[in-house]
Amino acid sequence: MADDVLPRDDHQLLARLTAAAEHFDPVPVTVTDFALAAIGLQRFDEQLAELISDSADSLRLAGVRATNAPRLLRFGAGYLRIDAAIDADVLSGRVVTTASTGPGSPYPGVIQLQSPDAMTDVSLDEFGEFTVVLQPGPFRIRVSGPTSVTCTEWLLCPR
Amino acid sequence: MTSELQTIQRTADQSVTELVRLAARNDHQAWAVLVERFGRVVWAATRSAGLSSDDAVDVSQTVWLRLAQSIGQIRDPERIGLWLHTTARNECTKLLHQRSRTIAVDPMAAFASIASIDDPNVIDLERIEEDRRLWSAFSDLPEKCRTLLRMLMTEPPLPYVDIAAATGIAVGSIGSRRHRCLATLRAELGVRDRSEHRTEIS
Image 1: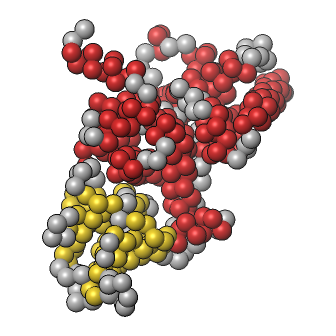
Image 2: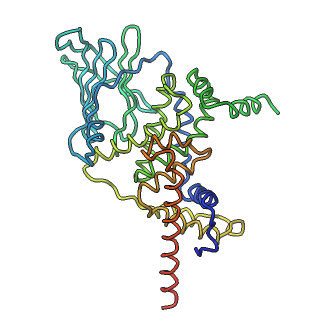
Image 3: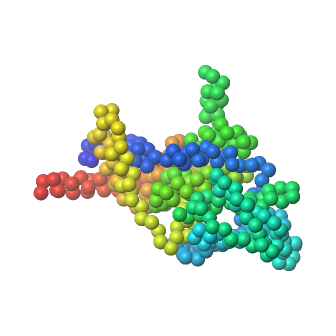
């Protein structure tokens, strides 16, 4: 592309680049359609659990480029605590109810694993622990209590 | 104008803060305007982080789910573009951390779409070829330049204060940095032109 063809003005060159981006790297229609539908997945009676720690955040802040270690996350909501480990496509974790002191007691029963198009029940064992194989893509953990539903933020299982 | 069109027009004219407030009340129309306005911000953030197309789709989807989930708690609604950019970049980094190996991006892969153009008569092929070369040179710019220029390429553009917060470049330096990045792009295109010219005559 010779200089006489390329705009000399920065604004015009940027506009030209913007047009090229629209042509060669457009936002995929699947992403736009998904984004439009995302608001429909939101239920307004859900409580968002607080992210207490995420090993991936610590690595990011420390500037570490890559690791084979599982990603460890801890969420809390009131007396509920959710610990989770993502190791490739395996999600394992533990759900406990905590008093103000002490180790807490295992959460009884069943939680849900939610993907954008499915909701799966996951049984907890007597220790409140679980292990599931994930499909690649976004997912979150839901815990239905007697009066409310608590969700973790959406997480990503890598391909 | 039908009432539906009136609704869309009214929503499109609203401030970002107002759109966020409406979307938090489950107003799908307002949400659609946010998706339209900021779709490019999210996508550009994932692509300038060097993710493959598949990974960029996964991260973009996660970011939109996050926004839907947090829309009622966004602290600074008028800076939602910055929130989206930062969330997307953080998710990209986390994804790359979870990999023991990263997948190399093929910036030319997108150009395959050229072969699928149906009717060459209605398309300015020369212009497309120029844009292809421009985009190819852009893809070889240093990451900091690609990130900055991508943020400036969104429509409407992100406010300079948000770009400054996301990139760490002082507000008063964005213009000069942009100029230097575009100069690098021009120089890169010049080198390619001369190289191709030499190949042609040899």
